[in-house]
Image (cartoon, rainbow, N blue to C red; front, side):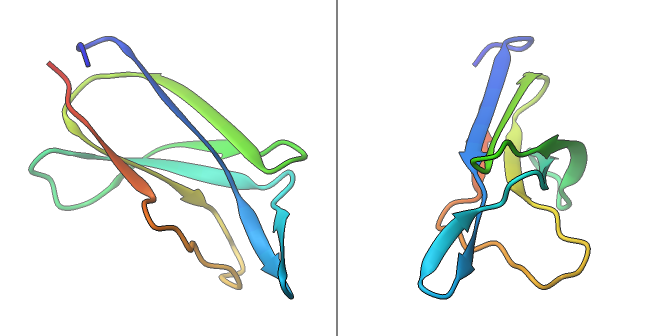
Amino acid sequence: MHKGGPVHSAGTLRYQSGAVRKPLEGTFGTVYFRPRGAVDLRYLDDLRTDRNGHLDDRTTATADGTRAVGPRFDDLSHHLDSDKPTDHVDVR
């Protein structure tokens, strides 16, 4: 990826209700970034999901690092269950 180029993150947030997974409609997902060599994730943005639980983010590549997107829950009654909630971006 080239510095200044577009970075696109998209996904669907769902929750488990019994045996069925349902979309998290109208909630927020939070985008974080950890520059290469850093320890902590840095907050980038909150994204609102549509009626199907989809969220979409487009930003500009500024540095190598790892992006993470996950649900934002104020009541802590939910958790993220994902096999890969992060993605590394190599910027040149």
